[in-house]
Length: 499
Image (cartoon, rainbow, N blue to C red; front, side):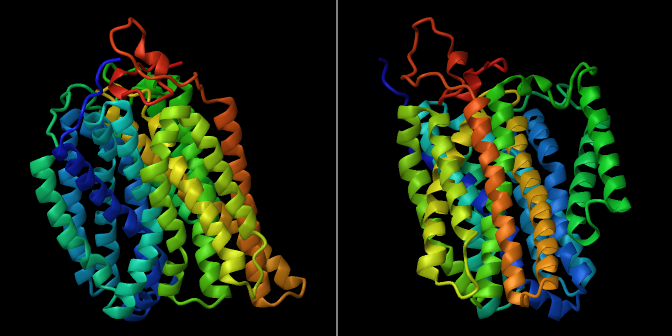
């Protein structure tokens, strides 16, 4: 067996720089939640207007991930990362300085643009830098920790900054971090040229894709207020579907497609992205409704809510950074993924029994432990499988697709869970339960639906994903590396026809 390639210290520093950029973006998805009451008071937001502080970010972020990933392939992924981080940092300054509703919402939209462009290519750059299987598994473990634990860290940091200083600092904190990330990325992240704008500069296709995704996210975000059957929801969803269908049809006909559909020929790539969406949707049941249970039912302060999630966060770090990589090397990604998903399912089932007078040690901590274990060992194999069918020319697109599946899964999942939880709360109130009991009953239904989504993800992982027996990757033996697409083979070596 040939000696394994080694990676320099600068490669690992580059990984940490990229992950700090990703952490800053992930944190921003939840850090704002804690500050919403302060924002409402200071800027005199209505409830509907306040929702746009979140929605403006999510619409831009979810709508531009795929496009950002593909443009990164064309112009160079480091250029796209630097551009996105610069926009995000400037937008954070504008958010922190905002003295009006319009300025804050506009700056949040710009922040979403920067977040999408920057994060869309991070995973692609990581798997390009770390091509050797074991090193790639370790690198994906770091990325998986950031992607899965960043949200709970955002709750804690948001509570500390809002309570100790003011809501302005949940945005200002991004400025020194963003500036340092830009400076270090410029020096340490390899600058590999893109394939050129002539390979996919499909302006009409880009407009169809971006418009369809943004309208789709906009429709989903309005479900909790307007309902699934509302004319507004149905019309927006129909238009979004028509735009996306037209885009896909166009990709089969143009000479240089913006999104080569060959990526989806691999069962592992397609299956991993579906599982990713279901996983994130299910996790929202525990993450967001669990946080609401702690705050609205048990009466925890924002800082206490963040501290309550720390055991799960610590376990995510341990599992993703120390445990997932050796398990994947020995058993393969799919064999590791299924127990991880099962642990998350059990965490949601445990939360579905939480009483209104619950104890943290008995009713919450066991779920946090199962959540940390499950998320920590699920995300690295999902990332590996989702990138397994990408060539170097398509790696940015595949990276954007992974993040889009995460964002769309979260948006749809939250809309579904919130709608059913609110409806069940109303029916329980009508049956005579108290406000707190009815609220908790709605949360229980959300946990159970989330568990159902994770059960479906387990079935897909078991039935759809392809898992050859793991064995060390050899060199020069005449074997086709595409046969190992389901394990830790560098995406650059894996053809789109991995199945």
